[in-house]
Length: 121
Image (tube, rainbow, N blue to C red; front, side, top):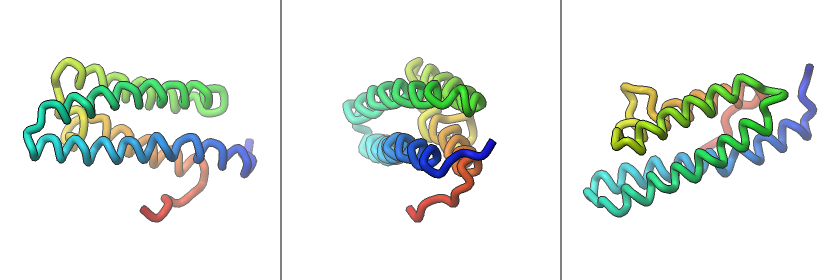
């Protein structure tokens, strides 16, 4: 069935801070790598773990209406597990299913599902 505008707006409002955090962490990671800053890298990884908890809560809350989003939660969780094992290419790498790459797919799916165009960045 069609989703009411209010429902759509609520989902977008819940998603937006998560999306902004992924973007912030991706930049922070690239900066930490460029500076070879171990502490900054650890801070990003810890923040990604917190973000993953929030993302899993978000997809669980939508699961009845949008069960396929659970798969994005699982895939993001799998990328995070690789990151926590030290495979940090899984943060923003483009040649593998990195957190950032999966998130981009999730974002595209969410926009398609909600029949919206991407907000002007």
